[in-house]
Length: 543
Image (tube, rainbow, N blue to C red; front, top):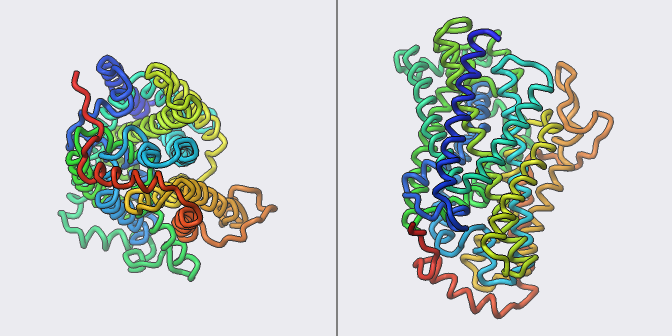
């Protein structure tokens, strides 16, 4: 192992050591379910905003979006716009009302006025499915990142990385609960913003802080000329690709407000006002970060030589930010380059650890609180039993994620994330929105919309070109999941949102109008008052 790899390994271990220290500290501050599930509802707007940013700016955003911009120019940036605009939906429709009307999970808000068992079962199923897709993306990303940065090839190193990340995320959740996870996310958000800002300043200084010069150099270096700065390079060649892009955009914009690991963050603030404030902080942070990705992506296209740019292309874009860090630090073989690539890699690793911890926490809380207590124990489980179940669920979900991530390494990470967004927008958002704004909405509507959205989005992906029928690229590499001899792709789009989201909303409406549930209608006024005013909502824990 040479000096550069030792430095990178040392920084990786330092990040892990800091996060483990935070987790042990948090475990000593945690007593009871409200602490474990919602951090005692004591995080301020700024702290929760940083944590939301830490939860949301995943490896897919940090590595994937800057890579997409480096390879596809303008079209790569469209991901950033979708991810950011989505927060307006979360701010205006969900954040404050959810904080007031729920307790620990997404299902609490639905079950408030409906039959507990069917609604909680559906919501918990959807939560676990979305979280597993998202988890796979992060863990596959971790395997690829670490094997690349430590210069170790072969599947063994990647599998080992996935095992280590899996073990760490189970540890964060079972020991630290929401407090530990939140502080890991806050530290990661600060590291990510500081690391990105440093690279951005160094890139811009190479062009005398002249953006126009940066874009011009990127366009000519990419070999694509002016087309690199205009729409249509990635989406726009055919009508199908335009519809596919529209479908992706809808899923990104509507999916955020239905992502369970984002929704659960709104419960960690003392009041709904703080929940709203935390979203505003998050929008500011995430907005600045996505502007950074513009400079990182175009900077990679402008400053990397043809060999390094070929490496970025081969990695599907994931290596754009680390290789750019090396280039602005002085290039391959220089001390500055080695230090910066190690710093950016450690930040990317911290990013992955923070996001997986949030995902495992969300799904294990849903299993224990919604399935174990409400469905199997009819709400009679003691707090200690429920917490024990959460820890067991975290272990099981972590193991499932590890076992699925090892064979999933050939998958495209961005597709897994986009699928998680599509499922969240198709299954969770219709039920949440109907429940808050439609008095007549009832149990059948909720169950139909969640299962309908879930089955249609996952089903359409199974029959899409992602799974089969895409053919091979110039190097002979299979572009789909299944062998080239199998083709079941009758659905032409890679992103199912444009079909599955309307199905989720339609089935929610259909289920509701074909059944009557007076009890659900009676409790609507109560839910509305609680959602709008906060009367009767969960209070912060005082130690």
